[in-house]
Image (tube, rainbow, N blue to C red; front, side):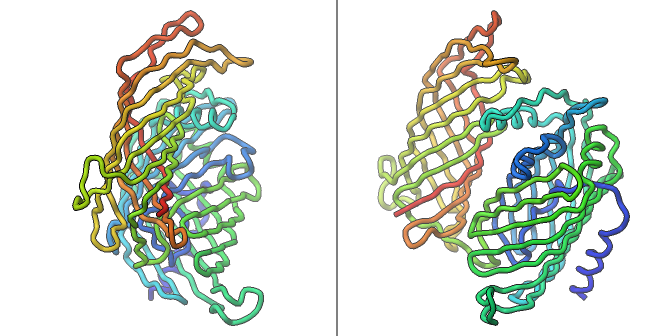
Length: 461
């Protein structure tokens, strides 16, 4: 019956709807069904599709999903949608949150059947997308998108179902070129409806080859969407209504996937970090001596790099807290408030302390951390209207920083290293603000800020 349920949903998703291609906001990102990551962080961008062939439609997407228990999963999705052509250019953001329950969950080496049902909310409106997109564009040297929000502001309830079926056809060791690999087929179909009458669906058929620590999948995917009235949403739907070729690979905690449409220009790619491989495979947090962190700060996009090493300045050997001294540097050119022609060229160097405590007994795979620091921050204003633009003078200030969040063990890096995903908040407080003159206009800088921090940390003995 479980296999039949998966097949019925798979076939039912091919009903003649109209719609889009891409990760449906509010549904889990795609991963082979035998994999059950404790945490999945996905960054999706059309820049990772055909190298930026078109910078419209669902141009950026960030997806967070987490296993809350053996049966429950939580999802959070932020999408940026744009359309730059007349007669109705504009932009809109989507923020989706949902909770899913594994209704059917049969997983073994040769056969997987899974059905997850869920409910949630989806908000559309102005949700930081402009600052995130243009800040990212400044980092990669791309053009700034000066598009007005459409003015829509709405929240809808969502309900969804996601089904997967996998069968292993050739076990490892059966000979041939792929003799050391498990090889089989994988079906996935899902559908999401909103209280406003919107309906998203997708279905895919893939060949899957697996062996630790690698999965490779290749196949076709078809997406549909209906019920969208806003111009930007409707244009996105028209552009993404297509069949697509999908190629993905997982190597340990790293997942790369590209979705190349056959007719339209809405192709995209995903870069993802997952915290474990199979159900029950709980990675262990080790007491490493040295760590290197890389993170992105949002919505005012900046890159942050940090090094830390174990110390015992504020704690003793019997303490349950792991203490580290940290040195961190950050850089970015975030957009100045809502002005798409002005950006803040920023650099910060800080020195401080990180305290971490495990939240679980089994393997210590989940830890909470708090950090404090002092540093020096420099800011200057630049314009990007034409040519090289204009620059203000620069101003520097001493700054206090603080952060808190979670670190989730992801994978071992040989015998002497490990890798973890880091999620948290970080804030800064300059000792005082400042005013810079740009094009004869006085603008306030060196302001307090609170940012979301998504990153990874590599640790070594």
